[in-house]
Amino acid sequence: MIETLTLALNACIPYLVYLAIGYIGREKKLVSEAFFNDLNTFVFKAFFPFLMINSFYHIDTSKSFDHRFWFFCLFAVIGTILVLCAAVPHIVKDHSKISTIIQALFRSNYLLFGVPMAEALFGQEGTELGSVILAIVIPTYNVASVIILEVFRGGKVSAKQLVYNVLTTPLVVGALIGAAFLLTGIPLPECLLLPIGKLAALSTPIAIVTLGGTLHFNAIGKNMRYIVPTLLFKMGILPLLMVMLSVALGFNELERFITLILFATPVAAASYPMARNLGGDGELAGQFVVISTVLAIGTMFVWIVVLRTIGVI
Image: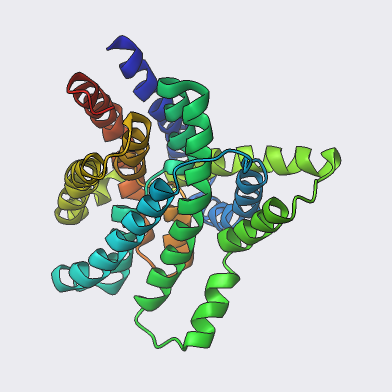
């Protein structure tokens, strides 16, 4: 029980520290909010590609896993996206909020929660499977997010322009470069691996600091009618449905736990800079990241305790 709580705290508290640094820095006028806005754009375009390159380059493709689970994760994410794209526009009319809410609902912070939590509960086997699923869901997240944000900008985008916008998005560019090295097996020299790794490690902390620097708590109230139902579905209902489906399909405890992480972890930090830079509601996206991260300390603890108690994971 204490170990589970510690795991949840260790996953979430660093985010709150980064947020506090940005928020206090702005409130104390150490830097301006305009600086944070510029930094956010810089991080999105210059840092996040290295995060993707680093993630793909270090995936171990030598391991053999149940391909059924690969396809389950892929189709579960894609199926969720398609259902959300059909349903959310009937409920929400503001296009910038539609794309932001859809992204918040399907895009979990698997990149930073997935492998560490799987390793903590299942050891090396968890690390290996968690890393493989990373290679499947992260490109799906990124491509889908760009398409959704572009489509719901409100303007008309040709298929050719849409493809171009997707392929030139920094996260997708990084994913393509990383995938190229992964599939070809071309080794990168240490003199390049070192800065790539360092920049990858910096990308999320700096993105969360910039989020803190642009966060206005008095603005949360006006968005509560979007925040409450979105996060209730995202962190409660959707994970339950997906874990039940994984049980029904006969997957093992580790695979069920990966399914839980895939859908129950907080809204991905990358959704904030993507929304700000691609026509979404950046303010609402930031609020989703912050509030879901705080809630995850409790929700992930409850999920793990309950599912372990009843023998699901």
